[in-house]
Length: 220
Image (cartoon, rainbow, N blue to C red; front, side, top):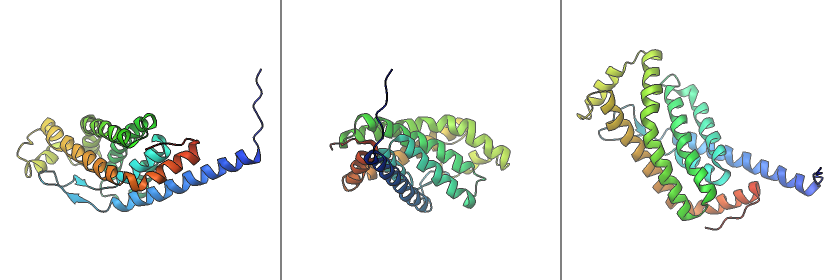
């Protein structure tokens, strides 16, 4: 029978410090992600309802600094805060949460094992691939049916709107393959590239936060 060592005041203080830092970093990154959601950019040949923003960058940084679970928490909070301002009855936020969580979660999970500059690049490449592939079932079985049932915005109407800017889109399958997949691929690549180049300036935050909250010192 083993007996756990008593928790001393130093350990308790360290845990409180870690918790405070974790919450503080999460709040800051959530606020940044929420603001960046409003800096939307329409893309050529993409349907008008698909607009690119940089809000996944703080989520990705949070996933690297705190771990994939906290990256998903930031993604959730970002979309919950945005709900009162939604124009899609929350459907856009739900889709954004699912795909963003997959992107940041997979990236952060791999980074746990490969916490270096090279590891960050590998993890973001994997996250981008998962994001692009997941776009098909997420939109086919969740987003599009919800638009039809909740907002009376049929898939046929979405196909027609999309075909006006991209003649390759003629059916539900071409909508998925020629709109949602390239959009999410572009999004993952751009977010990854920007995060990679800002990695060095924020790496001190990432490693210091990981050291305080996890007791691990990383090398990059």
